[in-house]
Length: 366
Image (tube, rainbow, N blue to C red; front, top):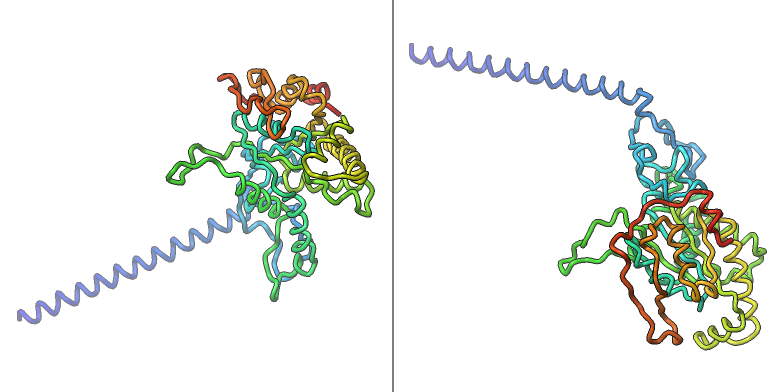
């Protein structure tokens, strides 16, 4: 009798357990069906549909181009770029300034394009003193090297449009190379780290920059005329650094300039003078093509004698009057062997906003 009781009890337990498993399985199936229904509603919703019109690849192959199955962050609407720094001539103000893979307008840049022996190191160091700005020095014409690397890889149509086979890859947004290039420039201009290797402060809103005297190296002897070379550089700069301000620094006292070049670089001959005359014209032309909102021209013959010329640049960049310098610094020059190499700006110095279009026109050095 006792045995029969236990047998009956065990059977009831098994039945109850089986019923519970069946009910649990039914709940899982219903939950999965609900998720599927929600996914269909979400992907068919206009809010979840993303338009991508800036991708390099225009040839459709085995992969569908239907973006309705993807979701992304609206970077433009969420202000992932600095409208006061990214000018109206950049792609950052378009309705589709990036993808959720890459957003090249997120970082602000300040790039000094200079002639050699024009006070470029001094100017670079003075810009580095502005709050929230971190400048680096020369980088052996890395801009042009990135352009060559992009042409080597992305210039091969068999690679760009190859979806299947040994070169297969997904579609490559045109912004991807811009982000990769900026990451490299950022890698060689790192923030200050603590002894333990940690960031001293947040770095996302820092304006990064550098100077270069080599942007036009080798271009004078190219088969293209100067105007074509300038236009090519404008396209390249805006492609790699869509949210950037550019400062051109020339030196117009030709005889003194040549003497300084020959002393510093041991270069002699008429071809050196011809190159720097061509280079001055190229930098002036580049700033004119960039326009008064994106390009600013300085002549070191003027600003090395009058610090207010540098302060006009500081205002153009969007810094308050408290950021104005009272005196020039001096780097990499024998004439100012005992000159100041650092100075303290006012504690009230801050970034306020960029100049208006009218103010840009008023203080432009074009």
